[in-house]
Length: 365
Image 1 (cartoon, rainbow, N blue to C red):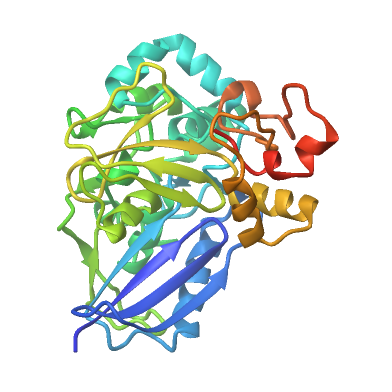
Image 2: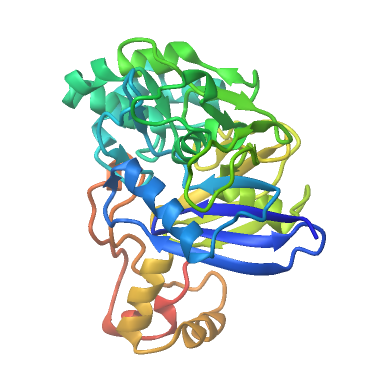
């Protein structure tokens, strides 16, 4: 029996599954929580990964590992491999002024043409620009920028404080496509956009293909043997599409901290409205995706307001005819679009008590 281990470093926790490669049977698993907040020290993610390995009883018997993770987060490293500042995560909305200024500088249509993305606070480039404008000393110290799953893969290869190992920095197409300085059309970085945001050049991780090996595990990692091949990994939604076996014509819906709808596509997508982001997938194709900043937490709030379980909430939603006016609290903790990034709650229309206490509050068409 050949065993493999997969890590999911999400917003709220790190989870590891040890599975049988041939059957897919889950043999054991472990998890460890992440700190709350939208700006987190990436070392805490690394410690959670190691804690999840311990919780799973170690992974000394696996033949390969790979890491998937939350997308877009800005991990800035200095020349010694130290983290420059807490990583600004995908759900940090501090950069909405930078969304406006960067969009104005290049033009919305040009951002979409070059990167497939209309800028949102989620995307890495806006966080880089925020750091350059608000923490110029940190921007000057920055010699490399990676994403959360890149950072963890790099730590597994032996990179870390005092051991910069820039040549071992790697990412995949799906994660690179969420930065807004990578092009799905050219399959390469738009380094001029990155340098415009940061104010100078810096190391970016090499972008690997779906079947490439990112490296091998270093010696001395607790519960992890030396020399295990590390798969390229990827962003959470792309790996969800891969795990679901989605093909052209299929659509995936994910309700987690955020909410996403995505569908595989053979070619890069450039949506002129900017609603659909032209991401890449984990197979060499593309993954157009639409997202909302909050999903499961909002459902928790609505269920609590109505005094029902999640199953009852879903049943109530099915009783509302499509197209009927409905009033779910769409924005409880801000959004990614600049106009609503600082919002705490949003209701619109002729709202009455019955709209907020019955089936109409469970559905949004």
